Length: 170
Image 1 (cartoon, rainbow, N blue to C red):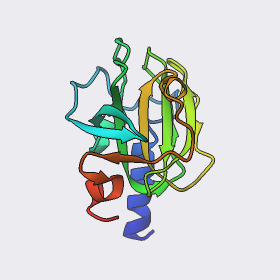
Image 2 (cartoon, rainbow, N blue to C red; image 1 turned 180 degrees about the horizontal axis):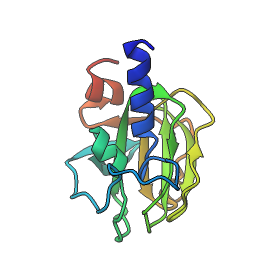
Image 3 (spheres, rainbow, N blue to C red; image 1 turned 90 degrees about the horizontal axis):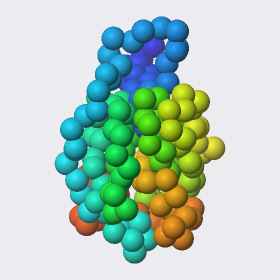
Image 4 (cartoon, one colour; image 1 turned 90 degrees about the vertical axis):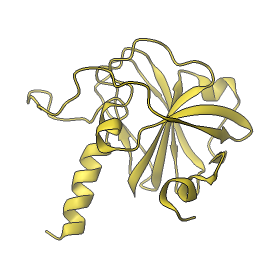
């Protein structure tokens, strides 16, 4: 197996997350998170014209933990953004996440492709229909609906396009 294939498999396994990565539920994974992570650094983003302060889950561990074990609902202007290492068919779940969320699956151009409800503590993966997902944005349950945000809406940071901000290219 080439180095790129190994990397792709490792990254795909690590970022099938949201609130953790799906694994064999019968197996015990010693690397699985056991507690909430502290609040992560934030960046101001714009979903269409709607501003949000998004925590940045940048590392494999941050992405794997996501919102696990957090018991407080997100503020209306808060979110968590997952810049995925590779463009892929994203898959998130809610293991150990007691608060329901809404998630936007976003393509490399920063355009929302899909919006999904993530049910509290649900260990079933919510798999993207598209294999062209590079970012995932988790918000409070129903946020996209309350703000009339649908697929096709573009997302950018205060620094510019998502790809440029996180990967140095457009």
